[in-house]
Amino acid sequence: MPQESIRVRVSLFGSLRALAPNPDDAVLDVTLPLGSTAAQLGIAIGLPAHAEVIVGINGNQAELHSILHHADRVVLFNALSGGRAQAPAP
Image (tube, rainbow, N blue to C red; front, top):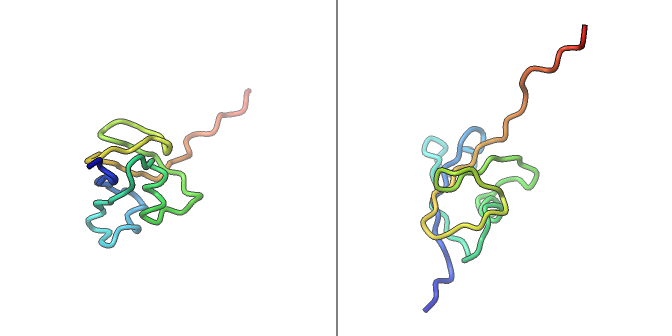
């Protein structure tokens, strides 16, 4: 019988830890339908639709449209912004 679902482990960092039942150990095992994307994982764990996140899958940077596979290890970070503004020309 073909596999109809996958199970992934997701680690949450930054303010995303609040999505975990226990923010002190923000690692979740999530079951999803076969063919699910990282974006669908986000929906499943309650990630706000407007959230800007950085996705890693099995140690590699990925995108929200990346397809997940059984036993993948996913990390989600808040996207950071900032840095030094460019100084005006003299």
